[in-house]
Image (cartoon, rainbow, N blue to C red; front, side):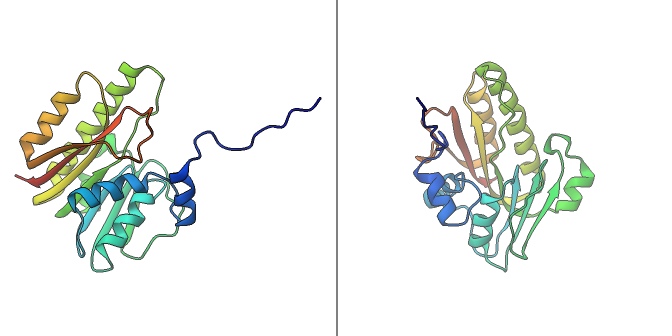
Length: 200
């Protein structure tokens, strides 16, 4: 007796299908869309830096918000293969090894810094949360270097024992601080977003 194999991806859901229809490379775009609807962080003409930008969904969405008068810059270990608008540029680099040379290359005076970075997961919650924290601390360090006064910061973090410490760091550097779990985040995911608005 033959058994039929289901070819459906277990991770495929309403958001994955929607992303395909709307020509975004990943469903993660809807997380940024929810954040934007909640906080209106990105405006026409803004300069946006996207850390961990591959496969490119956040770049495309941010580019649409800024319009051609804005500029969107992405950094990732992996190249972005999707076609990007002319006001978007990407760099292949390790954010954890970001130095003055890289920061000078990507530029400064950004209105928003976004980080949807996630570590390679091990399945060990403590290890994964610690790795996520390292990425978040690096993202916040970069944001403090390149954001204009009044700029905004969005950062994904895996909840762990150091979550509150990092959240308080963001709170100290920005006038408004929010913790947000998008509806489009998978229910099993430990990810949550920390939003800082109005860099001091």
